[in-house]
Image (cartoon, rainbow, N blue to C red):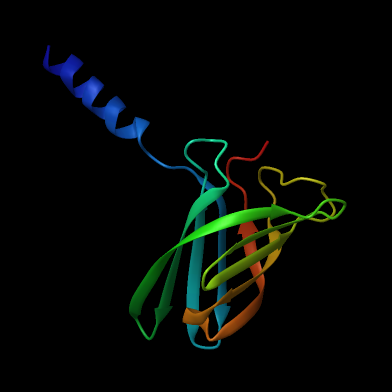
Length: 127
């Protein structure tokens, strides 16, 4: 009986876990950062949660954003934007993000003092 309760407890917690749609990392002068954009819930929603974590001189700070997505028709790019954050990922030569690939991106955030290019971005749940 205990095993059954433990199994159901684990399942119920993992059912509410979020999966990242895109994960990016990069550097800007003395700052290192990661940006995770979660898949929307419910699935059809245009809004996503983005979490930016910045490490500078061993101190970590972060901020959460609500972003929308804009697919750029005819171009292999996607843009995530919201108040205080803009991320653009170019997945050329692919027409859509693919699992296991690393793509180039650019990020604008006030936490980074402007725009940073040459991010490394992955889409961990792409096909």
